[in-house]
Image (tube, rainbow, N blue to C red; front, side, top):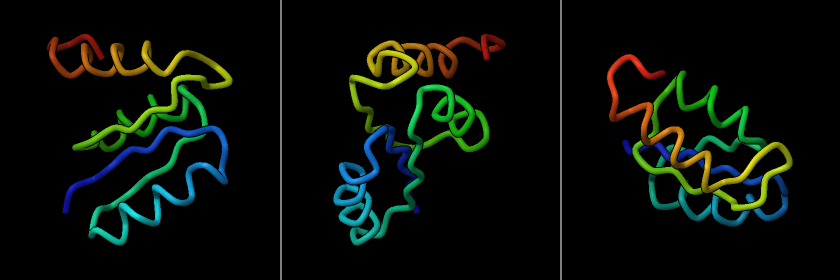
Length: 77
């Protein structure tokens, strides 16, 4: 089963996509901050990441770049 990391700081905004993804048979983990997302990414690397651009502790674009490079460059994590 594919695993999705959904990064969204507004719980109400995360609910509908989470339900839709789970309804499609995907495993979904929701993180509310960039830091939580980084920890989730380390614990269980997702197959798909959906990121809110504006997070309370960082920029969603930077988070995507950070986690992508961690996966591409051995020893960078």
